[in-house]
Length: 350
Image 1 (cartoon, one colour):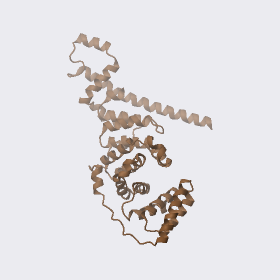
Image 2 (cartoon, rainbow, N blue to C red):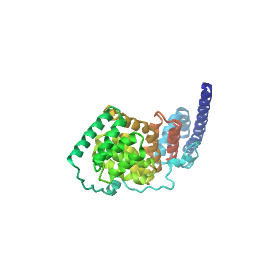
Image 3 (cartoon, rainbow, N blue to C red):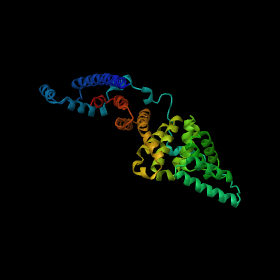
Image 4 (cartoon, one colour):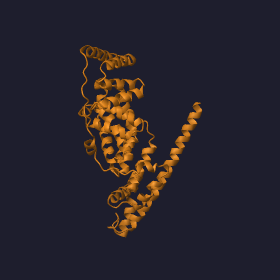
């Protein structure tokens, strides 16, 4: 068994080396053509020197210096050949880096937030004093049991409290989250949906509901909840929740064709200082956010490529290449493709 794994690992390694060799050969061919072009065209890095000085320069200037000079030149005069061949890099997922049939709506995140309709609060329902007192006692009991890790008993207490006070939005949100945590997803989603019909729900409940709607492939239903969560000021005071909200918001925005707004949401999620708050929040939330970061970083690179924000794409792919859980060959290849796509073949070769 162990020998089989080692053989498989060596096979994968050889495959990656072969792919990298092919990629480097392709990039080298493009750069070589550019260097030859620079040597013979007016306006190149060598035009101002005499024939004798050219010979001396050719002997004394290193390949790295030539590439650096060419890279500087390509900022103003991109390599047309490179921009034409980047799609041909072996093993590249081209579709993930191009807009394709999905065009950007052009709306900013704040414009989309402004478009979200407000939810009118439900009319208050009278409840007798005895039922209210018992409901409150069970609520406190349920929260205490939850802190002790007794999810089953905590949920039972909360559901009983909700039966006594069925119009309580706070109880509906608490019960919905506990039901999700206990693996009763359909009931949890139903509870959170019911809470959302009674008025604006807290950011955490909106995040959970939006996440579950996305898991059911209903981005249209998820988006309003996640936009309201983004608008909730409590998100900005809680970086871990803010990172989680904006990660799901970005996915919903992409699914609905709001690419530039999704890029904004991804930036907020990935730049949230979650590590310094790890000891103060629920470890499940922190773990979910941190596990999601490598995939989100790659998504940000792909999204930036699709909307032609190449500076952001280069930064994201560079970061992803150093993250655990990601095969570095994938961001490496996309980084090269992004550089070639901009006509910067010399930069790709360094």
